Length: 305
Image (cartoon, rainbow, N blue to C red):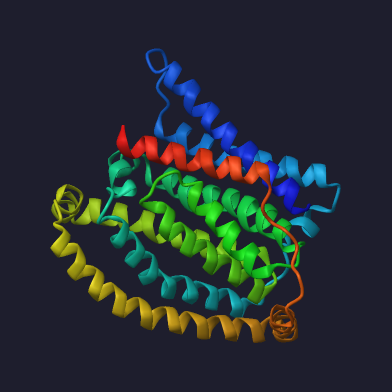
């Protein structure tokens, strides 16, 4: 799997997504997709092309995806790393809310009407697995073959952010994508990003149901509250301080994971390669540019219509 195939794969995903959206709009007077079907289809749009890309590559699936064993101690530290990265995502979410609405809150009512276990499976297990197979598996590892590790981390994370198709989630999805791609490099296993993604989504789902069940008034106030920019800027100032501290601690956890998984020499080699100034392989091609333009156009249409 090289960058050209990855870029065609991503364009295929975007075209499939837009095709499904167009079909649903055309059939809106005849058929309305429920939340469960919506979640299922949105993840299959990622998983099916990723699966086909693995088949077309004619390589062993694990060679393409990189599911390698993790030590139990590493698993616990990955969970810690996930929580330490939380304040940074909260900060970016708050900054985006100065300009756009919170996309998660806008669908929370429909989500909370579903049984907890069903929502938990769809959003905290099925979704993360599909997304990691696609973005840290096929996309990121495909870009890695160019030898441009930094470019692979940033570009795969950018595509992960754009795939959320809204300006609220895109910034913090990009940050999460970077943190998960770096985590994969530190541990040498795609399992690490799967675990992080599952934990991140799980705590969000549990928090939603917990507040709605035990503190319904608080939840209602949060979802209906109109926050002024002054209030948001004050909150951002607090989040910024917390995020600087916790993200610094997360970097320390990454270093520990690197040592625990025996990846020190590999990371040193990557650092020497980066400083060597050797020319890196390309990552951008015409299909990728078209896909990014389509994503941005869709996001802008949603913002202004």
